[in-house]
Image (tube, rainbow, N blue to C red):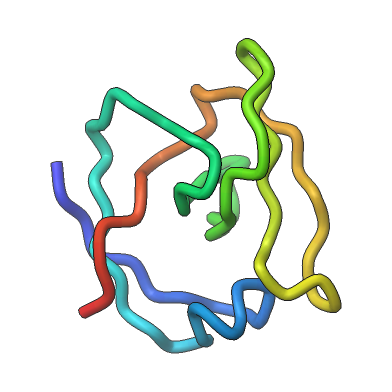
Length: 86
């Protein structure tokens, strides 16, 4: 399934800016280091880059080190994988 997302925040600058519109796929099979994903905790969604995969745990972080933190998440928390800007 394809879904549209809107970037909010500065953690992914300079590659993604607040207000950018994205297309992402919610059905995907492969996930690798460097992929950009959307994940959520139920009340909020985040756009982050995959930094590492260790079994079922995935480390993600923003591209902007000043405005980002590292998250350790489960694959089940990932809602979609970035495809393109629109």
